[in-house]
Amino acid sequence: MRTQTIPPRGANARGARDIESSLDVLGLTRQHIAALGACAVGFGADLLSVGLGAALSAVFSSQQHHVESGSLALLLSAPFCGAVVGAPLIGGWFGYRFGPKRSLTWALLLLAIASIGCALATPIAALIAFRVLTGVALGGFSPLMFTYLSEVLPPASRGSWTAVVVAVGLLGVPLGIGFVRALEGSALGLEPWRMGFVLGAGGAAGGALAFLKVPESPRWLAARGRRPEAELAYGKFADSTPIFPGRLAGAPHGPGVGTALSITQMLTLAGLFFIGPWATTGFPLLVGAVFIAEGFALPETLTYVAIATLGPTIATLIAAPLLERISRRRAIACSSAVMAISLLVFALAHTPLVMVAASLVFQIAESLYLTVLVILTPESFTTVRRAAGVSTAWGLNRLGATLAPLALVPFLHARGPTALLMLLAGACVVLLALSLASPAGHAQQSL
Image (cartoon, rainbow, N blue to C red; front, side, top):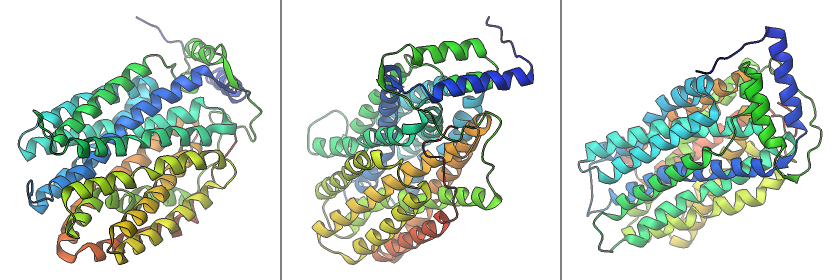
């Protein structure tokens, strides 16, 4: 049984600062690349599972598989309901108690098991239950991943490399939807949408295996007083082959020191996370149902949805090098404005080309909005509070994502696509207003 020695409080703080200072000037190594790869695979499996909600929205809105609006709303909101529990439980308590790396591995294993359950579920009630379980894993993985990346990546390129992980992970959405579309009409033992969950289970299991080769966060270990383990974890990064040289980070903060958030900034972050899903989750989830409501066939709808989900990966990769040169606050504000405009264009369009183009622009802006927001949030908390702060914010996001389908699906059926899109555009305008009072972030600065 491993014993843990906690040094005196002052010594613990000094040791943590030593580890953090060493990490800040280390630069990017092959071990960092391995960590980025594990996160990208896991995040891709995470987003594939979320993206399958858009496929389920279209499938269960079609005449062949039609279910009543109440059941469809529950199905679409189920993973986000589970995420409300998963964010504070896995992303918060487990992450703080057992460390980001171990908790990330557990989250992916749970996602793999729950995805197999979704693939085999027969009644709609069973599918809803397993989607709740996938949500527990999804809710814990994302905030922990962004916390982990913020703690191990060099400050000078933290935002850019996090964006690269997001961009690669975003491929999970078109991969899942395109996979389901490609299997439409094929003679398989399982329906195409069920095979999509099998694919997601394989990705989650692969991500869990990849995390077995990744060191724990040295910052987390040092903050917990586990100095020998922190030095060992740091050594795995430091002894690895360098890829890009490091450079001094500006405005260093110790583990107990940081830029204190004002009440306004805390409420602004909470608002951005809670209100954001009404547009950023609501539209991607319901875009398939909107196409069906406009009279498009299911195969066409799945094709259009899959095409629109390819843009965010390309745009995020292009934007990644620029994220250290623009204020986090300004990037969030610009993305919110573009989302609002693209939703209005989509609402007024009735031809596939314009609708797909508007959907593509929205999802590009949405991906940049979320990418910058999840980079900004870990930067706004100190090491000892980072996991709790990020998981709380993510829990609010998942709560908003839970409520959005429950309210928006009946609204779509009662008022029609145009009214729904106008409502979502209004939510984006609110995000624009909130972003102007948000924290500025700490681009290229030590945490």
